[in-house]
Length: 325
Length: 168
Image (tube, rainbow over all chains, first blue to last red; front, side, top):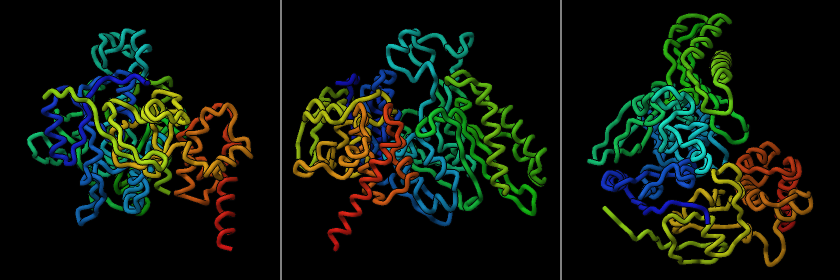
């Protein structure tokens, strides 16, 4: 038998029940596909007393379109997101990002909500019990010291979800159901904070139930690409999503978001300085340098930070040039 | 809220047979299959969903049995490598892996075949690229994949022949 901590499994049929259970249950965690969560449970990184499985909640599993845009349930699988014709047509970066998550088997049962709420990752955190114990654990889990930046009291574990940056370039909003039964809508950016230890702004009992992609940005060209060690299945060493609209040879609208290079998926500031100007080599170089400056990868992967910073700039530049045609 | 009863009744179908079992809430599907039922064809290769050795079909789709809780499989239809042969005759994929030498040490083979089975049910006529994509979640450290891809191509061709043969 594989090691597993002892926990009680709940399988609520409604989102309201799930949120209430999470708030009322001591030391409980939500789990959907479990492609990352159950790995952490097996490794003893998470030792919950209860798991609340949200895969029996049917009303968060659909993709619907109306005049406001596309509404994607948090329980939609990454495979269904990647193969949905509306997503492919109107928000191509989102479909590309979903297809870039891990391998096809993971996409089959991993969910949108799970990928958005993915725990941050680090060389010293996502390891087996004996490996972590040999290092006296780390700041993020049980330990005192961050092995990435031993002098500091900050955790630099990197956000490594693929779907979030692609949704951020489309100004996505999310629905959160609170334990009190109130549903609130907020920009996806506000789900995250720049802290590897605690990168989600959710309160206990808060359940992300849906993502909304606005109609006003539908069909605007976009793309997502990531660098990884294993081409077939891997978390991003660095990833970039770009949405670009050209008009008469000049940039009309641009937004860039990054993953894997900070504790949160980050919208690149100042990308809009390119608006109104042609995308010549100088403009593309300036865009690349701007991206590199804002990416702050730390030694959280086996690949050196300087390389990931160079790569993320190159990815953003290449995608922008490709979208410009 | 404290609850000490950490067990769930699972009613599911495993390789076509209906079962009702009481399983611990923290039991993984792979342990349910291997330890509880004795179906040891499904392998455990890693602890993180990286290798694909534990791939089984749940409701016809590939899934990592080592990242799935048995209790969550209530009401599902589970198929493992043991389900594929028909009265002792190997199925097309098993014949393909045999004919084309798609297995060397054999440890990845059950997961590889179940992932390929899921792929062929979804896409009976895959291109080489479709096969590479479809098996991307499965690692083989022996073959270099070339023989595995040939095995799946062999199986796809066999299945096509069987179909047209039956129609004629």
